[in-house]
Image (tube, rainbow, N blue to C red; front, side, top):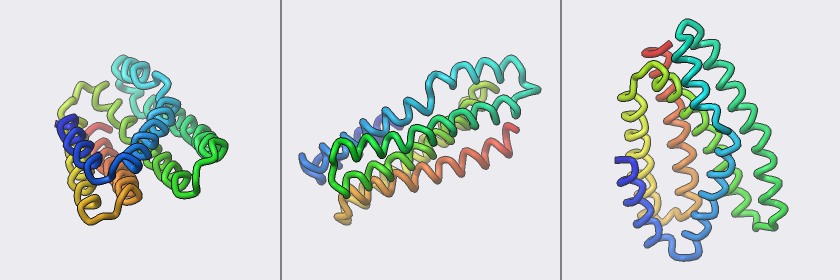
Length: 178
């Protein structure tokens, strides 16, 4: 479902944004990919294994994992901005890269919460949360493009969607898992 929603949004975005802005959208996606790569660094599988082995220490292990991932993204965030500035992008694109990076920070939180679900073998909740957030992002993104807010609107919607996903995941984890 997430992939279908993403394809629907990308097809519509390519049509509405045009080649220039859609190319910038793809560039922002590349920045986001590399940024989240440094926030993950293969920590997820190791954390799942350790939490599954030591369920009584799950909260402690999760706090360490979350702290490590947060430290990694907060250290790499200024590097992301520095690279954007060194590549001599215009101010609007640097602003969008800053927002995309902030959005990715919240995404790291959501994915960290997903580690607990997998470790406790509860696969429905993260799937439902991901589908809900993807649906909201897709509908809001299409609405923003339809209302002609352009690339800036799409990036801001992604930020708010990732914030909402983090809040929903946090509440669900605190109530159902921990």
